[in-house]
Amino acid sequence: MKERGQSHAGQPSVDERYTQWKSLVPVLYDWLANHNLVWPSLSCRWGPQMHQATYKNSQRLYLSEQTDGTVPNTLVIATCEVVKPRVAAAEHISQFNEEARSPFVKKFKTIIHPGEVNRIRELPQNSKIVATHTDGPDVLIWDVDTQPNRQATLGAANSRPDLVLTGHKDNAEFALAMSPSAPFVLSGGKDKCVLLWSIQDHISAATEPSSAKASKTPSSAHGERIPKIPSIGPRGVYKGHKDTVEDVQFCPSNAQEFCSVGDDSSLILWDARNGNEPVIKVGKNVGKKTPPGLFFQHAGHRDKVVDFHWNSFDPWTIVSVSDDGESTGGGGTLQIWRMSDLIYRPEDEVLAELERFRAHILSCQNK
Image: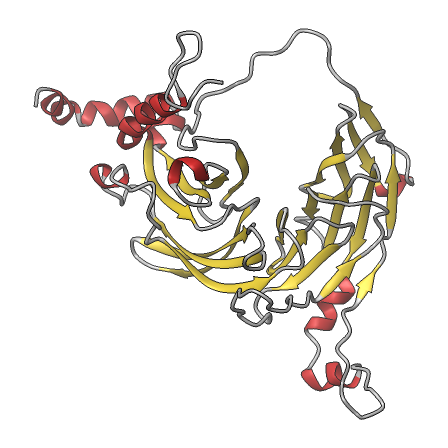
C-alpha cells in the first residue's frame, strides 16, 4: 500500500497536490476559512442569515459530530462569520493552520442526537426547522430555536426531537430532502422505498400560543405531564428501486415532483399527482461518457468529501466537510470557500478589469 507522501505511477501524492493547491489559494479564491473539527461530521448545511455588517455577515451553520462513544453524537448549530466578496486580503486567506479552529466558526448550540447524524437538511421556508437522518428507519424533525443547549457528556440523555417521521421498514441513513416550495420531507432507505411526508400541521402547531399547546399535553395519574414525541406516517410510499435508495431531491418549483437515485444504478422521476408509479426511470448508461463541463475544482480536502452546500444568501460561497482527520490531527476538516469572480465572470469583463490593473500586476511579477 502506498503512503500518503508517495506518488502513484508518476502522479503527485495527496500531500504534494495539497501543497500545490495551497500555494495557489490567493489566486483562486476570494475568501477561504479552514476549520479543524474535533469529531468527524457527515453533513454540513447553511442556516438562516442572522446579521449583516459592512464587511461580513453572520449566518447559522449546521454540523454533526460523529463520536467514538466516549461522548454522545451531536447536532451542532454554529455561528459563521461570512466575509463579503472582495474584502479579504489575498495574503491572509492562505495563512491558515490545518490543525487549528477557524475564528470564523463558533459553536452556538449543541443537541444530543439519538444515534449518528448521517444527514442534515433544513426547511427553506423556515430554516430553523431541520430534519436529520440517523442509523435507523425514522426521520427526526428539530426546531433548533426552541431546543435547549446541551452539554455532550458521557451518559447524558438524548435530546427529544419535536417530531418523528415514521414509515420506513429498514434503515434510512442518507437520502433526505426538504422541499423549497412546500413543507414536505422526502426520504429513501434500505427498504428500496421513497417516502413523502407533509409537516405543515406540525409547523402550524408550533406557532400556537403556549397555553394551547399545554392543554394538549397528557398527564399521569399523579398530575405530572408526560412529554410525548409526536409522530406521523407518510402521505406517499413510492416503490420502483431494486436496491438501497441513496439520494432524493425535490423539483425546485413543485413539491409534487421529485427524483431518486439508488444502488441499482437507476434514477427515477416521480410525480405524486400521478400515483405511486415512476414517471421516468433511467438505468445505467453504458454508452460513451460525455466530458463534464468542469471549470473549477476545489482541492482543499485531503480525503473524501462527505457533504457540501451552496449558500443561498451569498452566491458562490460553499461549505464543504471531509473525513481527513488523519492528516489534520482532528476529526476532519470544514472549509468555507468562495472562488475568485475572475474565474466565472464574462471573459470581456475580466479582461477589461485586468487591463486596468496591468501595471500593478506586472510590477508584482517583477518583485
